[in-house]
Image 1 (cartoon, one colour):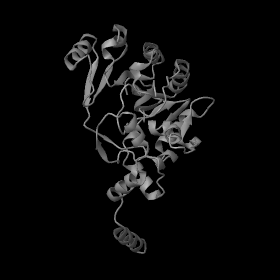
Image 2 (tube, rainbow, N blue to C red):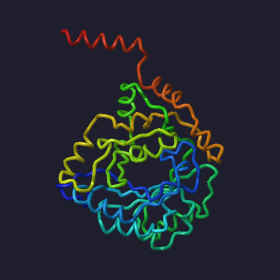
Image 3 (spheres, helix red, strand yellow):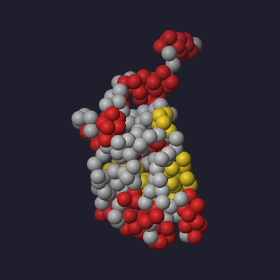
Image 4 (cartoon, rainbow, N blue to C red):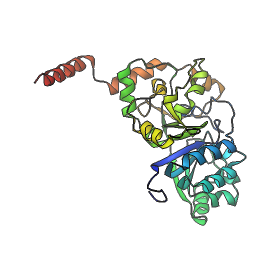
Length: 299
């Protein structure tokens, strides 16, 4: 990987959420942003966490995400620190684009890539053509990703079937593609980092176990722990409340207060049952498969 010393652990990307809240309200948002309280990341924490991680880790991309990262009043300072620390070859901002027209020249100079999520009914004052011009001017790679549906991800009902949790985890793209730094810890995915906050909305006490992430500070074995953690095929504790990449696709829509309340009341068991029907073989077939395995063992 370009820019990565041979001795460091390398991955495609690592991301950091500048806000937990957002300026739009998408149903089934995988970060639960429409439901979470307004919260801005600390620049001091960002600096401390990534300086520690950069000692042993390098990625192709540092992804600045949210919520909506353009809401953060210190956005440019985060971008400058990301460049200074050098954790990645490129800095990428993921945004819904609503506030792009307010971004100063320094914003465009500090980023390497811009990922704009385009949603039905969400208006941007900086249209596609003007955004493309700005990116060409500042040599910024640009991608528009247009959404018509969202996959349902977070659930408030625990998945009690260990086989289903494993099947969801094996099929999950997020666990391998969306590594996240949050609160002094490194996580395989953003869902693991926010699970306590999500479940608190449902009055469920979830204490994220140490095994769901890796401590970045006061850890003399950080690189070893990261390698073991990323290579571990076992699901995280948070996976028991997550559908990963296997959730049912629902038509994208914006929520009002009543819609947010309805989202909180959604039937998690129905979502689990839907995934189980698609990922697990029927019970009769399971028995047949077990019999075949036992027969083969006996040979």
